[in-house]
Length: 471
Image (tube, rainbow, N blue to C red):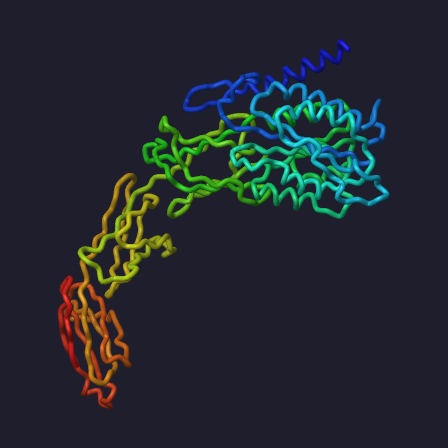
């Protein structure tokens, strides 16, 4: 009995040590103790134990059955968790309601839901369960997804304890993947009791796998898993300006789990009341690819997260602003400029006029689809600065003909002509919005069969004025 108390004391000290981890927040070191009465993060952790109670759990394992070892160590864990703040526990069991020969592949039940005092309820429930049935792991995990309360701010953790593979034709990997992708719970922990190598590999896709070939190894794995589940891992992303200061903010961001190849977290960057990048809780069981949804986007791949600590990612994110304006009252509808990379012509973005948008600092070619088209070459956007492009208020021309015909409008630039608009051959009245300038119309009536009957007329467009040309 004395030896048991000693082991339990060592276990408690280990949990306490793991939970008392330095968190570097805002340049200072803060320490979070296990037995604080108030959780400063305000984030609740919910741990769902999914326990195998299939018939094989009755098998002998050293001096006891697997079931006896599993329930005894779970009971000890509950004693330690009772004094841990902001933690709720629940228990789902499978394979314990019907005998294996009945082939029940829906034999799973939430025996203890998340509730205050759930630790004692789990201890009491474990005394009444007897292993007897099948191993419906996939179905149990799918049901586990509905066991957590609707609380987007909580950390939902699943710890699966099993001694065998799925035997109900389900796909535990697919179920786990879908629930992780839906952010129902974090990447599960899987503790395998006495599994051979081929079985272990089957669980790699379900979650983070821990192997327990002996009772002592199971205790170590369970201790490590619970400690990792409790020890909050946090992340802040600093968006740096040209001076290396994290001044940029209000940018959308996405984090993708690299190994699982799925999106996990989506945020709009913000700062807290002290002016520092906000901190979020993150699952440390994966490396991540980060996309900063600036224009153009920034990519940072293979980010490693250190479990149980505060992680900081710094990304160069210098931005400038571009304002597009039409002077006066515009005759344009949905006028939108196109920004391109001047080196390869790749499309960067489109921007409506009379708007202000941010872009990464750099050089851009801008095309404005007025008539005629306006080109702004090699515009440089500087960090923290705003560039303003204002185009003149357009004018209008009413082109009137009796019979309709063929022709075009040209911009006159000295001796050269640049075509900017093709007239519609079937219209006797056509209105065109044009930028201020000198123009020429070349026109031939649809009833004229000789080129010598082509007509030429020069006109000028002034901002805000309407010009009429008749043939």
